[in-house]
Image (cartoon, rainbow, N blue to C red; front, top):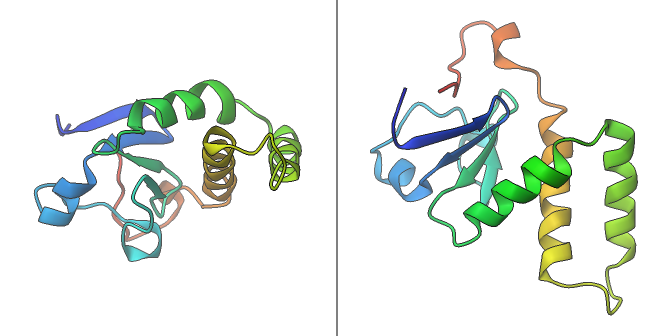
Length: 126
């Protein structure tokens, strides 16, 4: 177990993206082959990887654990629709935008096949 990686749950981990980019932490099979967002990205095996360097790390972690990851697929879709409906209204703010980003990330995470069912690929298990 790498002490520089925080395992929040089986589907959520925290890593310093700057350390990944510098080569201090390696072996992550990022979806798309690289870090695609400065705050969070996905691994090929369906794990959300949050950037521990981000000022929003703790808030995003809490939002995912408490609000987003607990939702069923149907509830997640309804929640996304409700958040998207706020776009362009006075209710649209950075919190809503962030929550929508995390909901879309969780929705995508659920579509990725767990790595243990694939052969010959690296896992980002901690």
